[in-house]
Amino acid sequence: MTELYLAMSLLLLLTMAGGLVRVIIGPTPADRMMAAQLLGTSSIGVLLLLAPAIGVPALVDVGLIFALLAAVSVAAFTRRRVGQDQA
Image (cartoon, rainbow, N blue to C red):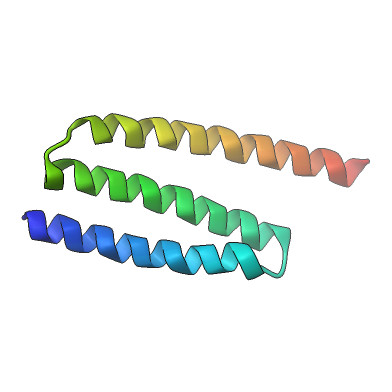
C-alpha cells in the first residue's frame, strides 16, 4: 500500500509541474490564479498521501491547515480583484 501512496504522490507532483508552467506563462490573471489553486490543492493531496506512506501523522494536520489557508487566500484574492475592477 505504501508504494501506491508514493506513486499517487508522484502523479500529483507531475500535475504540479504542469500547473507551475501555467502560472508562469498563463495568458490571463484568472488562468494564473486557477493554476495557483491547482498547486495548493495538489500539495495538500501530496501531504495527505505521504502521511501514511512515511508514517508521519502530523502531515495530515499540516495538510488541513494548508487547506484552510488556501480557502482564505482565494477569498482575499477575489475580493482584491473585484475591488480593482470597480475602481
